[in-house]
Each structure stands twice: as C-alpha cells, then as structure tokens.
Length: 423
Image 1 (cartoon, one colour):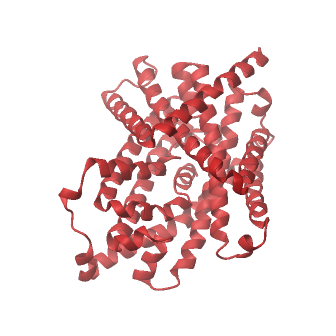
Image 2 (cartoon, rainbow, N blue to C red):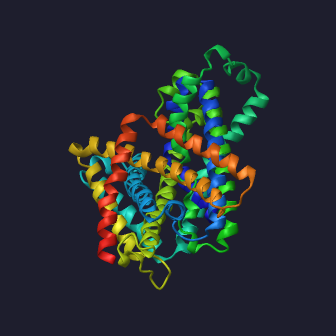
Image 3 (spheres, rainbow, N blue to C red):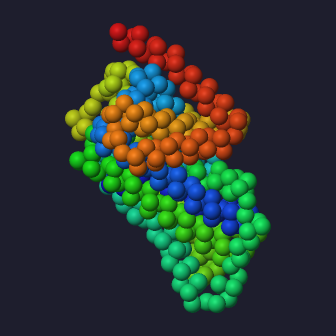
C-alpha cells in the first residue's frame, strides 16, 4: 500500500499528455528523463534515510524541524500543505474532464461538472476519514488499474520494435549535433513535475506497520518503478510516432495504441486516464489531512486539528483541507478566476520543490550533527540530491521562485499566531 501511494501519487492523469509537450525535444527529452529520474532516485534515497531515522508522521515537516527547528519546519510544511489541496483541485477537475468523454452532460449541462467534481472530492474524503486501510485499498486497486495502459504501451513497443523492421527504420537516429544542454534542461523542466509525490509514504508514517523498514523500501522501489515506467512509455511514443503528430496530439497514448494495436483504443485510454486521476486524488487527499494533523500534534498548527478519531484518522484535518479544496475548485469553475487558478497551481508546485531543497539540506545537517548515519555514500547522495533540488528550482523560473518565497514568508505570521495562542 505504501508503494501504491507513491506510484499512484506520482502517476496522475498528466502523464497521458506529457509526450505531446516533450515531442519537440526528440532525443533531448529521453536524456532529460534519465537526468530527472537519476535526481529522483537521489531524493528517494535521502527520504529513505530520513524515514529510517525518524519513522514518525509528518515526513518533510518532521525532517526539517529536526534539523533546523520548528519555525523552518512549519514554513516548509505550510507551503507543502497548500500545494497539496491546490494541486488536488487540478487533479479533480482534470479527472472529471476525462469523464466528460463518456458523459457529455458534464459539459452540456451547466453547473453539473463542479457538482460531480465536489462529489468526487467528498466521497474520497469520506473514504479517508473511514480509515487508512480502506484508503490504502482504494489506492492499491486504482494504481494497478492505471498501470495497465502504460505497461501495454511498453509491451507493444517492444514487440513492434523486435518484429517490424520498418518500425526500427523510422525511429530517428541520434544526432549529437542536436543534443545540447539547453534543450535537455528545457525538457527536464517539464519532466521534473513527474517527481512530485515520491515522498508520499513518509507523511502518514504512523499508519504504517514497521515504518522504519517499510517506508524506505517503498520509497526507493516506488521511485525506481515509476521512473522506469515514465522513461519507457514516453520514449516509445516520442520515438515511434512522427514528432509533429505527437506534438499536435490531444491524446498521444491513444494515437500510439491506434497505430500499433488498432482502433478503439482512444476511449479506453480516456477511461484509464480518469482512473489514474481518481487514484492520484485519493492519495493526495490522504496526505492533505495527515500532514496538518501531524503538525498540530507537534504544536505548530491548532491543537484541535490533531485530534484522531476512534478509527485512527484525523477527521477534523481532512474536513478542513477538503473545505479549502472545495473553495479552490469553485474558483476554477468560475471563468473570471481561471488565470488566478493557474497561477496558484504554479506557485504550489514551486512549494514542493522548496520542500525537496529543505529535506536535502536537512539530511546534510543531521549527518554533520551525527544524528544520521555518517557514511560517505549518504553524504555524496545528499550533496547530489541538494544540487538536483537547486537545479529544479532554477528550472522553475524566476517568477515561480519569487512567489514561492512569498508563500513561505506568508507562513511566518501564521506560525507566530499559532504559537502565541498555544502558550
């Protein structure tokens, strides 16, 4: 279930459109995936080490707090938490958008789409309030289902490559003159969004059996497995279909299946994209409730958010987070608020990148303090993870970084107010 939480949160509905944005980069996109996955593995290793040393709920908040104190821990967790429920609005609306292919009334009937979106959100909130085991079961099933079309693309690609000489002949050759650092960096700026979620299992650590063993294993395996799926599936589409076709496609996976497996695949891919979004939404709703609950129990969020129900779930934190998510969803369905919504999504993604940076710094600080295993391999990988985290933030662009810092600073008065009212 921990592995399903990681894989399910990393692989959302966006993967089905990613090849179209990467297609213009050709082989540079493949190298970008290799670079991004390598950086993700370094980050996963650091989270594995931290979760083995601190197998408690809170994940990124806990690690930053242990290294730098409550205030820095709060600001990182504050921005990370906001990134969750704002990002969930995008996942929820995207999932319903895919469903509109099967149910056109979602588009034609005014007001129906936001109602269905909110029903989806609150249904999954109820699942998570019911218990972590039920939510984990939903995550496991949806993760297995969402992997089916991706694995199908990979298998079909290998079969076609091995049995059809004309397919091999049409794959563009590597021209090193066209491979350059600028293009790889630009492509990697797109692929790095696929890393968000690799830390997922560290947040609800108190719900995990043998967390010091289970979470590190799940984190490493989940990142490796997802990285391989990303690399193989996207590479197959980018290299085995005409670049112009992929770049202009609204459903590159469906185009691939239709080319190599026959017609009828398009509607099936849309269905699996909806399932993929549904599974990702379930996992992120779990985290958006678990994180503030852990912060409340550590004294940096109002204490009543940390209350645990008889079923072991933070019901109050789930309800507050989903209420905030509801507001953002309604903003998205208001045309006048669309640009604001897109801006906030960009800001929330940057907050996750800052979280990667702070956790990498925390690993280095804790190792220097002797609180983390002092091995040279840990030090080297921590440095690599730190450099990768810095690179991802630079790649996000100056505007995103600026507003990410604004979000961090905005948490300071909230922290002061909470601490003052708890004294």
